[in-house]
Length: 116
Image 1 (cartoon, rainbow, N blue to C red):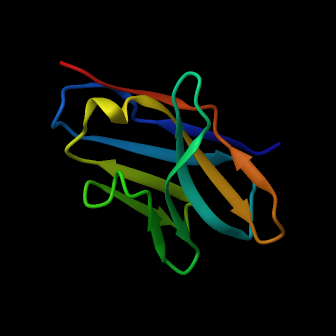
Image 2: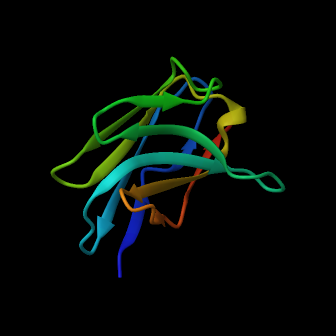
């Protein structure tokens, strides 16, 4: 059974930085896309950033220039560096691994709170 485990969430002041990481426990292969999504109460989960196996990146407009997604294919990990954080970035952040055959694996989520 593959499980994704996020880490790095927490409380940070506006303008601060956090780095989220996601790793898989168990064997998983043929990962195509890795990504980060976030969700706030009463709202749908929304895309934050994705990175394809070849390295191409996609960002939500709201985080462009502030967040950077990266992956380590050898370790099957994905990270999200979040800078210049804003209160509106407060959410539960989820990592996603999507395989080449279309299977999606989600993490359990990590809380990010941006507040003074």
